[in-house]
Length: 147
Image 1: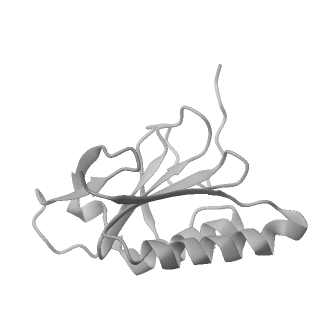
Image 2: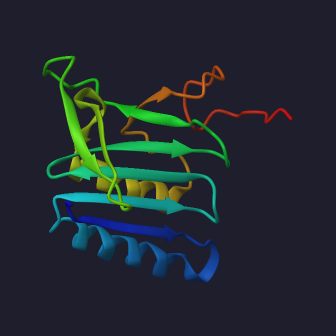
């Protein structure tokens, strides 16, 4: 079974926020030494941003609330084969494959995680696909939860 670096960090507003941001920065430094990583950053549950990493490439999933299909990253600069996939290992050992055109360079994904942690919103450097199908074009769009 492949080893996966797995962390979940909650960013708190107020006086502890700088400590949370420093903790995330240190987490990302540790993750760079592993091939596979699953890193979650949230703001008291939601919104939450997850990065799955395989070496020098990674993709993101943005969840707005519990049960949200959310948004996943798409890399408009991808130039490879459309059918190419990348293997990822989750923290529980599960192996998943996702299309290669969903991935960005890991350094860009880590920068997006830090931006999200600091700003509590969708990183502007990432292009998103709405997996929830609710008509929003960005995780930052206003949405109404229907019962």
